Length: 159
Length: 154
Image (cartoon, rainbow over all chains, first blue to last red):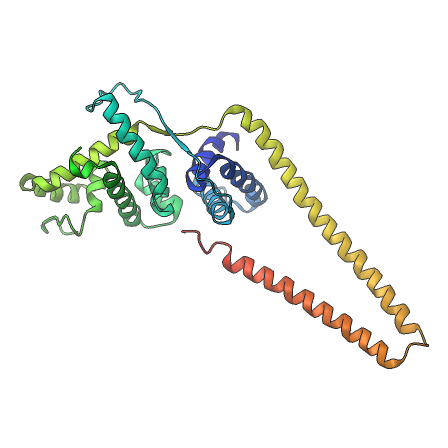
């Protein structure tokens, strides 16, 4: 469980929208996981099963919580992979801020795909298995998310 | 998709994202690349998607600080303990309450001074209360099972 906790936190915080709700959802999710472990089939991959429990609990938490605050669940850091940024630092920071805000505004089904691909590092097929949707749905939701983010960041006007 | 069918950027837009992510199959990649040769608009769209991907690469999800995890496991344990406590309390109270209700009912019914009509009314009243309780519990269970995940996208 300890191995998966940061990943679970990432899922929960990106779906609930704030730290407190994410931790609350994770507590419920870990209790459910603990209770459901005997029913878990060992020949099945663990992550999709684990993810679905965390995801459902987080979405229910978001729905149930009237105190949804919409805190800032994401933070951006400078590129550390040594790749040169083609944009000036200030402009890139501005754009990242817009993208960052745009991610918070995405509908849950799009945000989920976006987070799984970009922040959890899953491939399309893995996302499809994890979420139990066809790969075409992953593709279209991810593209729809990016289309929105391009609009939000003003990339479509060629900034 | 037939590899001879030209790529349609309006109908097949999601494939652009898959191409940028290197997730497009060879057949569709060939179709798309053939289309890109003569279509600057789609090329521009690909460039925008790449720019967005570069921008996103610098974003990271917030990580919960280590001290949060110590509190977290305590809370999980407490929450789990409390739910067990509530189950045991409810079970105990139900059994004890049922037992006392049965004793009261027995003593009322064995009181000879009480008219038969009143005894009947007490029985009917208790039966009504039981029916109401069962109905409320059943409705709650039904509602919980049916609406619990209504907003959850599967």
